[in-house]
Length: 374
Ligand code: GMT
Image 1 (cartoon, rainbow, N blue to C red):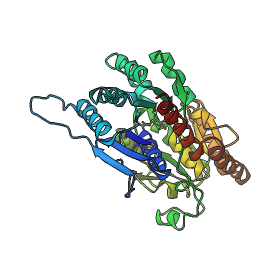
Image 2: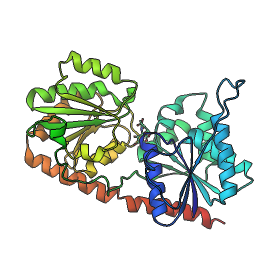
Image 3: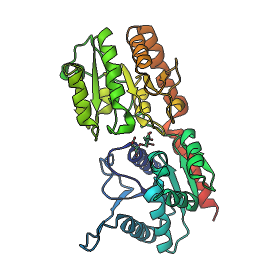
Image 4: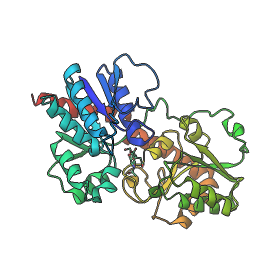
């Protein structure tokens, strides 16, 4: 099949899923065409049957805002025609589904459009009256719509009320990259004592991630267990986070690592992963951690309970329940047997429910159904 993929190419779970899916499809012999504003960051080497088409936006001085969406639709139309695509798979309803629909129309084509919903296009933008109708339109005019969790699927029905069936297809990780492995001297290289426990939080440091809850949880853990907190990523809340760490006197115990590519290695020196978000359609970072054998503590919201099963691979806590999160973390870090059980459960969860080959098959089945409709 010749498949066009549009996603946000910069760091973020949706871009990672789109790119990893494209790479796996290419490995299975499909021809994949990324149509994006820049080369997806995970497309880090040359693949013979992956092509990257970049959207050029005209910045004519009369435009108050450069017309990216129109330029993307035009590029999609061009690639549909020139490359004879069989279908388009876009990630995010806004603007990508709408652009694909317009692009298909411009190309005078009737190829199928698959739209995958990742979260914020529904949970954040879905209540914005300037966008809600466009999101509904993008969903209804797509041929197939998938959501990355049952929670996101149900929330889309509740908030947008589209006349469309939405199928859940879970996210996945590349198990060849994310696996339990010997981290070598990384702990030492980062200046962490061998006997110190390591907690990790990875995010884009936006409000919804509730990073202050992570710091407060760690503050409590640190009083009982010699430990370090790795903060990976960057974003608008970083300044406030640095300030909070200073105010709590945790500077010696928190490592700000910024945006990193070697997440697998960092997970392999970590004992617990923390994700205390107030909105989270899935939580890909949980899966990445679990694939490396790291138990997770996360809030009981959105798609997180579809990944974390309390007592099997970590613990769910209420939103903002720092005390419970800290006491769960202390429990795990001070009980090697419990940690081992949760580690085993984490690896099993990824293998049983989020296996990349099984997820790939689900997407391929969607594509084949679209092609078969003639
Ligand atoms: O978490 C973010 O803010 C980034 C966003 C994205 O566009 O990558 O993540 C969303 O999609 C991910 C991949 O499906 C999910 O794992 C995240 O849970 C989801 N984020 C939110 O729902 C806040």
